[in-house]
Image (cartoon, rainbow, N blue to C red; front, side):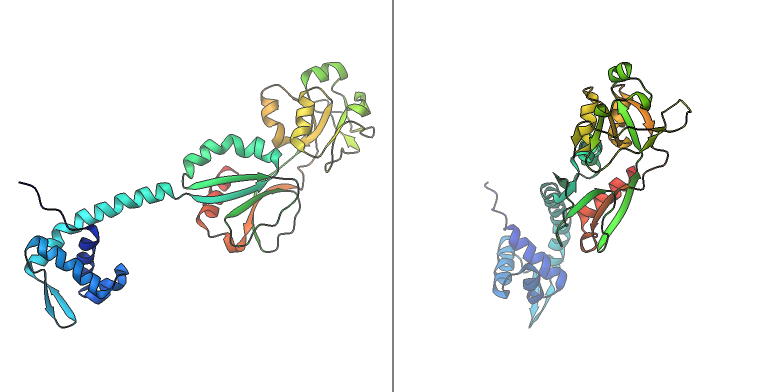
Length: 294
């Protein structure tokens, strides 16, 4: 015996809405259908069941005994179907988030942590954009920025991630050739950053001696701190650079810390967003994740 074709999902949903709301008109509004479409859908279910499901009394409708039984049988399967489809929608519809930052911080901080971020926030689809200029965040768009140093904070929500200390670093081979004492460093071997000049005096790490006056730096100049660190790795000289950018190289023994700034820099690394986007889901998720790491 060939089984009867089941009523359409739309027809079953129309019945469920009318049964729950006690009104074809309210069901039509909820389902975004016309009153006549709701009626036709319910008639198709009644035809399939071979029973009257509603007692119609003017504008008001009441479930019949058969209608009550059908509603009870349909309730759990419809909820399960809805939940199954919702899970697929959540997995498919990731929330976009643009992250604006310096390439040096992206390479040494964010990129190594991306697998952990993907596990913690699978619903967020990151788009990372790097640059040297501070770019205004777009209004009402899911975007955050990671900024270093001083900047205007009006209209922004800011979370400090960490303070940094400046260090002088060089490759072990360079140290063997030129020594670890700042007084021995040739001016043309003092690698320069365009926005972070060498101090006038420097205390050499581990020697306990008085600060040494440095010669005026005359080495290669870079506008990117990570390129500056790479130049030190290649033996091009000694670099004055943010400690957070070279911690990995130092741990691996590829760079050696020769001196540190006496005080932590007043420039910090900040996570920022516009106030009008702070409550967006992707922005909140990134703030919460980054704050846990700081």
